[in-house]
Amino acid sequence: MKIAILGFGNPVRSDDAIGIYVVDELKKRLEHHEDISVFDMGTSAFEILFKLKGHKQIIIVDGVINSGEADGTLFHLPAAEIQAGIQNDPLVFLHGMKWDQALSYAKKIMADEFPEDKINVYLIAISEIKINMELSNAVKQAGDKLIKKILNDLQ
Image: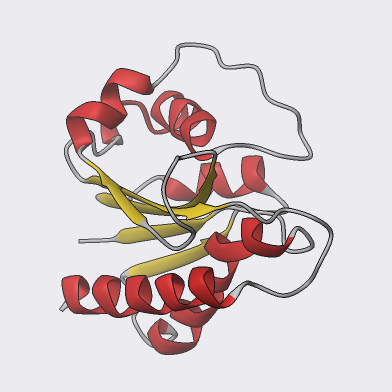
């Protein structure tokens, strides 16, 4: 079963880069797994969406601001909740895309191949999004825990 892992975020906006950090670390550990594709959605999201065809599971990692929880809190969204949020025609800007917008477009692009019941979205609470190339300790620690969880789940 082919699995796609997508990390969202802006690598120059401090904790907003957590999705990128997680997928960069997973790329290092999963480079010899031909059935797992790891994508950085921070720069060329539309181009990558077309590469999702043939994948039977999608895992998404992103930061979530204004969650009301402490930085580093991990959220896991169930597939039913994700399906309820998919839009028919979301407005996006080509220089940036949110995870829910990406899934909306992926559903159109993948058509019958879209794995509706095989989607996992992991969001990490963040508050720091100023221009900075460093993650805060709490958010980085949450990212490291999520990396371990994803690797364990893949086995």
